[in-house]
Length: 346
Length: 233
Image 1 (cartoon, rainbow over the protein chains, first blue to last red):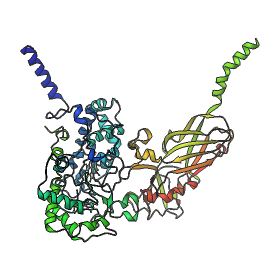
Image 2 (cartoon, rainbow over the protein chains, first blue to last red; image 1 turned 90 degrees about the vertical axis):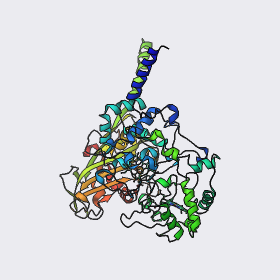
Image 3 (cartoon, rainbow over the protein chains, first blue to last red; image 1 turned 90 degrees about the horizontal axis):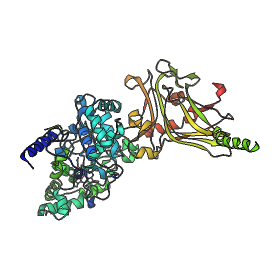
Image 4 (cartoon, chains in turn green, orange; image 1 turned 180 degrees about the horizontal axis):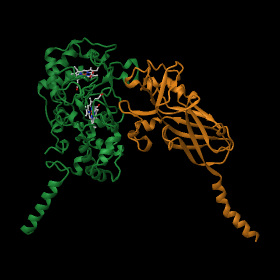
């Protein structure tokens, strides 16, 4: 090849690079949108076959996730509350912060391994992953927008018309395709490469303390925070008692069954080091405080879960071991995955 | 010559068969008690002498079935969203109904559990229509909204949102009404919106927005949906 042609090629590819929609640090290719599905995790609940992930669908989902256009006053995106470095939870705020500085009702949970989940939110009110985004978009204290106006705004944008066309071969932008695109982004948020995972796959070894922590965790916590997702997906009352400000009744609000009062979904503990503060109302700032709660054995509410018995009376050294173990659930591959970086931050 | 005539008749057979069906419009007429429904400005009164005005009446009609005497029933699998303020939605037409004697019509007020559970839907079931609970996945089957000076809600709002597809608060309701005309050319269903607010104490229960709270309201449907003769109109 002559130097001239080479130079021309270089220029062309540079231009293509510079004008590409994506984050310049990372080109997304077909192999980047294949979800990681570790055998240990079992079969995903979300139907990946009928909702296949494409490069263009993923890029559109990511664009939407980080775009304030989904909120009424263009101040808040999904990513404002769900921060990548916090496993898509939100550090520091006990309760979520939405448009107009409004305070939401609950602590922002992490978004990870959602395709193995059959219900969403702290109370499990949402029963399909695709339908989850409607809740924050339309909630007056989160994004405060109507679906009608969101679709109008997206339809008025040349960028989005182009992106929806490439992702779904459609000229009209609909709620259906917007939700499917967001799901293509969320479906790839799989955390499966923490030190815990590598240890399980014999790619890493635990220190003695971490190993003791794992065993103590299995004896005391795993009845609810079941491996490998670190949740069994059930609703339980872990005895922290009703918060005094919001009087959140949890699962009861969905089922109206008094037996569900003060039950919340068992959260995953993956990346738990990054998702402080803790619990649905963010009442504990540190893991230490969480362990102290479980160990103390003073449980509030009408019917604290019987499985809490196993947590009572933890010795100091046990707490330290469990803490060391919990830190092995931090998945830096996930937390630094360049596919998830906001495409508009360069 | 005779042969020719026979041929002609043969040609007519398909035409006759086609002529054996007819479109049947189902008209939904909205009233409050004896009075026609007027939005916003007209005040009505319930049993407790509480005044109220209506601003919105919308509901899903699905799984329509015409029960035929001696022949197969006519069914429609489509979903319809009736909005009392939009005359393009208050008549549902079944396009090809075989001419015959129909005993009754039945339909569902609501959306079956399959369509509640299987992710986002399109058309009239698009959540953009505002007939969807975002925080407690499921369709709102019927929405009646208005105001009453006695309502303690902000803006004196009165809202009855009926939905819920899971036991014990499965509020998917099946309505069956007799068909009184033969041959039937159109079906007139009178929807008495007043019956829904008739027994509520609007000074305490002004907002019904959960499956559990809505369950007692569906028990009122027999007083809401009536069939009428076209001559009564």
